[in-house]
Image (cartoon, rainbow, N blue to C red):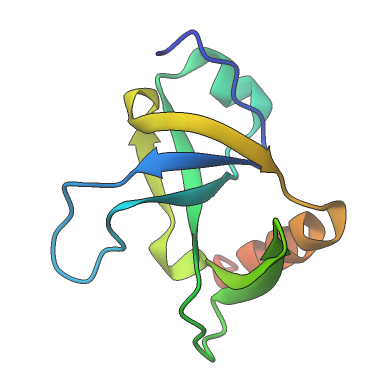
Length: 110
């Protein structure tokens, strides 16, 4: 699976199990946030899971993907091995991608 071409801002169905505690689990859509250069060479990617559970957290970005409303859960950001990838299901809109990057920058600001 490490030969799969994965690009930033693509949305993939990813198997997140097994998990522990409060981690988002199951197979679910996740947006790739790691840079393309890293995605090309490394066996793992950095993802932000999508969730239909809406929370008023500063680490959440509202989005609509494939006509479904939900949120990108930055508080659940993680690195996953490419072997967890199931299938590419689309690309997030530029508007949401820019908003996500803004919130990521603010979240991890020193």
